[in-house]
Image 1 (tube, rainbow, N blue to C red):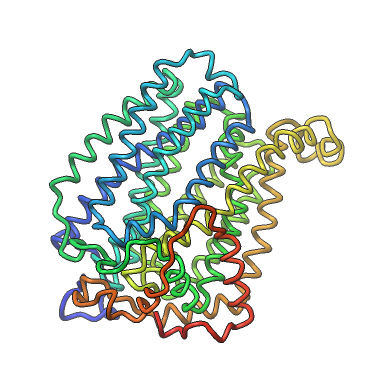
Image 2: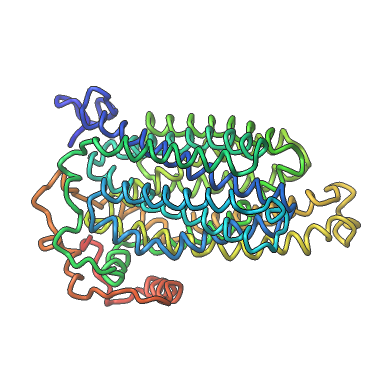
Amino acid sequence: MSMEAPNRTAAEAPPRLDLADPTVRTFAQLLLNVLLVSFINFTIWFAITFFVYLQTHSVFATGMIAGIFLVAMAGTGVWFGSIVDHHRKKAVMQASALISLAIYAVALTFYLITPAAEWRDPASVRLWVLIVLLMAGVIAGGLRTIALPTVVTAMFDAHVRDRANGLVGTTTGISQLATSVASALLVGWNGMLGVLVMAVVVLTGAVLHLQPLALPEALARAAAEGESKRIDLRGTVRIVRGIPGMIPLIAFSALNNLLFGGLMALMDPYALSMMSVQAWGIIWGGLSGVMIAGGLLVARAGTSSNPVRLILLINLALWAVMLIFPMRDSVLLLVGGMAVFMVLMPFAEAAEQTVLQKVVPYQRQGRVFGFAQSVEQAASPLTAFLISPLAQFFFIPFMSDGSGARWIGGWFGTGEARGMALVFVLLGVLGLLFTGYALGSKHYRNLSRSYRAGSTEPPATNPSTTADDDTPARGADEQMTVEPGTDLAATFAELVTDEQRGDPGREPAGAC
C-alpha cells in the first residue's frame, strides 16, 4: 500500500504515516500490544540482573545472566525465523506471549516456595533455576522480535517503512522507560515477588487485547505458505549469499555485538557502584525517554537515502562515546554518554531493518532475520562470559591494588569501578578501529548498491506471489532440517570465505 497522497510524488512531499488510514490505526494497536509484552520482558531482564547483583554482589553472576540470554538468542534465531515465515503472524505473537505467561507463572510459584537465604548464594542451584526459568520466558519473546519487522514489510510500502521502523523504536523506548523505573522500585521494595505478579497480570491482559484485533489481509496467511515447514537453513543461506555485501553486514553486526557484550555485562554493576538501584532505575527511565525522542525523530525524518552508511556513522559515534564516558567516576558523564546511545540507537536499528526489508524477499524475511540474529548474537555471549570473569578477577584487582593502580591510577583513578571503566575504554578503542575499517571497505559500497537496486514485494503489494513462483524459492528443493549441534559458526565462516574470494557458484544479485 502507498501511504502518500495520490497526486504527490515523494520528491514533492515526504511520505508520512497518517492515523486516518485504517492500516496505520491497526499498526498502532499492534504496537500497543507489543509495548505491553516488551515492557514485561524488559522488566524481567532488568529485575533479575538487579536482584542477583544486590543479593550476591557478584559481577561474575550478572555477566553469566547476560551470557545465558545471548546464547539462547543465538541458538533460537534460525528456528524462530522459520516459525515466523510458516505461520500467521498473529498466531506467532499470541503463542510467544502465552509461553512467556506460563513460564512466569511457574517462576512465581518457585520463588514463593524457595527460602530467601538461597538467593544470597551465587552458587545456589535454586537461584540459577530461577534465572534460567526467567530467561526462557524472555527468550520466548524473541518470536515477536523477529515477526515484527516482517509485519512492517507486509503493511507498508518501501517509502514509509523507515518511519514505521522508527515507531517500533519509539515503542521500545517507552517500554524501557517504564521498565527501568518499575523493575528498580519493585526489586528494591520486595525482591522479585512484585515483578513476577505484575508479569502474570500484564501478559494476561496482552493476550486478551490481541485476540480480537483483526490484522490486514496481507497478514492473514503465512509468508511461506506452500513451502516445507522444515528449517530451511540452506535456502536461507542462498538468499544471504545472493545479496552483495550482506554477509559482511552480518559479520560487522556480529563483531559489533562481540564488543557491545562487554557493555551489557558490566553496565549495571558499574552504575550501581555509584548510586542506589532506585536512582539508577529512575535515571534509566529518563534515558529511555531520550530513546523515545530518537524513535520519533526516525518516524519523522527517516533514515536517509543511504541507511547502510548511516549504520556505520552511528557506530563511530557510539564507540567514541564509549571511550569518553568512563574516563571519570561521574554520574554526569555516565548519563550523558548513555543519552547519546539512546538517541542514536533507534536510527541504527531502523536503518538495519529498512535495509533488510528492502533487499530480502518477503517470504524469506523471518528466516533471514532469524539467521542474522543467530549469527550476530552468537558473538555477544563470548564477551559476556569472558568479560565478567576478566573484570572480576583481573581488571578490578589490576586497578585496585595492582600494577594498573600504580601506572595510571594517579589520573585514571583506582578501585572496583575504575577496573570496569578500563574495560569500557579498551572496548571503545577496538570499536572505533573496526568501524573505521568497515566504512572504507568495498563491502560497504557493495551493500549500498544492493540497497539502491533492491526491491521486495510483500503480499500487500503483490498478493499472487508465492514460494512457487518467486526466484529465491528455487532453493526449496535443497531444504535441509537443522539437527541439534549444527555448527552455525562454521557455516558462516565458510560463507565469509566465499564472499571474499568471489565464489563463482554464488547466485547473482538479481536473484533476490
